[in-house]
Length: 87
Image 1: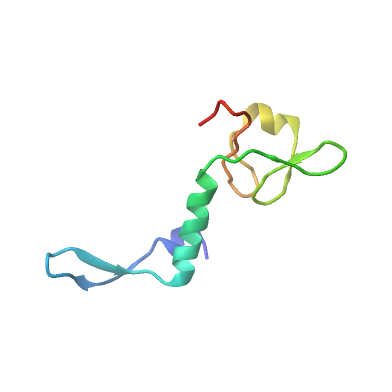
Image 2: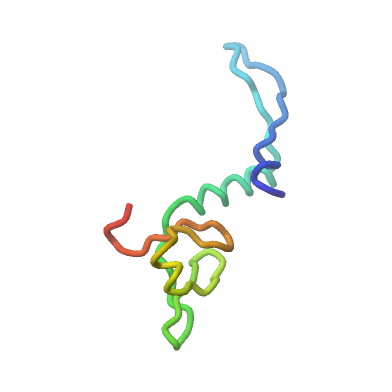
C-alpha cells in the first residue's frame, strides 16, 4: 500500500459535537506511521569493515555524492542527519 492509498479515509459520520469521524485500517495506520518515522532525520550507520555507511532504514550504501547533495535516502526517502548540528 502506498502512502497516498493509506491517506484515503472512510467517512463514518459525526460525533455529538459535529466533528467528522474517520476510519483507518491497521494497515493504513502502519503505512502512515512508517512514513512519519522516515521524516525524522537519522544518522547513517556503519555498514561494513570497508568503512561504507548506509541508510539506517533500508541499509542502502550511501556514496560521497549522497553526503554532498542529499538530505534523504534515494531508495526509501529516509531523512538523513549527517552531523550532530542538524535538527
